[in-house]
Image (cartoon, rainbow, N blue to C red; front, side, top):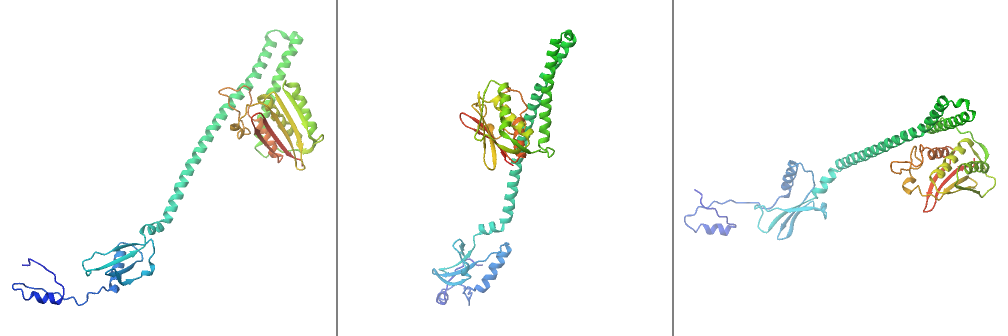
Length: 364
């Protein structure tokens, strides 16, 4: 029975054991104790394959901190990892060191395509969510605009219809048919309200055609100064506000569709009279390319928050749950569309004391 094992190294140590009685010695003779790199490399390669690792490596065999043998050391880099063998099969003061590339970088490199694809998918999902939120917000705004438009149309149509109804009822029930003066008064009242209804319907129909190609401009040469003077004179009669018209050139001529140009300027000026201050200034200027009509007032009903939305269809500046002045919110939208179809521009400038609409049309 084996009760004790002792390892001795060297021939002299083994010979001295023969002098001790009662000891049975077993000798193992190692003829070749040198590390064979040629046999070690396939073993390491097989181990890497078994673990499904396809990487290059280098080996270093140290004796007393000196490299005794080495393999594939030219692949070494600063970010390489290394580990040292603690095998008891190595001699004293010897160690085996294996150096291999950083596994994290290898994994990232191999997974780069999958990571990129995953990132793209995540970004796509996030973009779709944001787009969905944008659509929902837009739909909510459209619903609010629709509700506001229906409310405005109801109020705008109800007043003239009720007035016409009252006039007809008065003619029928109060025997005013024999009173010529009263009859004419009621008929004039009905005609005015019918004209108002007709204008409202025309505005809504014009808005429907602005977004399509069915609206064709009939351009011809006109004196812009005369058109603006005519518009200003008309509004001076209708309002108590101070309206002033100035021009740097007495005779400004350009090719426009006079009907739609007149309507566009009327809409902008009407907006200034309804919502602007008491002083309204209209300026006309021209350069070799285009002419510009500036309509400014000293009101403060518009803010920079309204600036980007003021030309949207049916948009009206909110004042709580009420509107001091009734309307459909299509006047400025109409003006912008007419300017666009002429190849011109319209924009709004707001400062502390003035609201300025600038409408530019090409000369030709």
